[in-house]
Picture 1 (cartoon, rainbow, N blue to C red):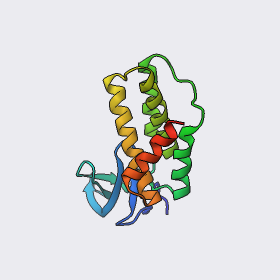
Picture 2 (cartoon, rainbow, N blue to C red; picture 1 turned 180 degrees about the horizontal axis):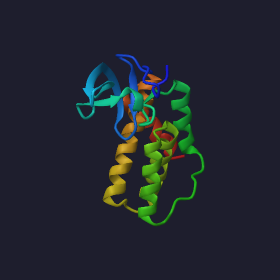
Picture 3 (cartoon, rainbow, N blue to C red; picture 1 turned 90 degrees about the vertical axis):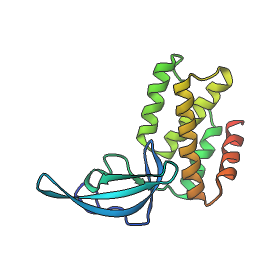
Length: 167
């Protein structure tokens, strides 16, 4: 079903990814009146922050809410981190903006690129505080989704990621 038409795309209990926030679970589908209209919302519980977000059903796709990737897709994203990196801007502000845009895209492949880029950059020179926070956030997003998709614990996924980054 299509979220743009206001039809449900996700169901209660389904794990989803909300870009920049991470892995969550659809806990409820609520209706609320706003400006004389009834609007349906997904109540998404984000365990890492112990927060529940209400996302309008008809805006979920637009906001980047998506299903968890398959095991193969998660493995492909992790494997991509041992491949050759694309050149990155030397100016940290440009680099930061590019990485922010990748994370906003919400794909696991884009998040893996951010982790790869910032990890290797940190080996050359210490990352500025904002980039370090971005790296830590991207790494957590990648570990959370990959561990869920591959049905492995976070420690095992973390070890796998760093083994790929060191190649």
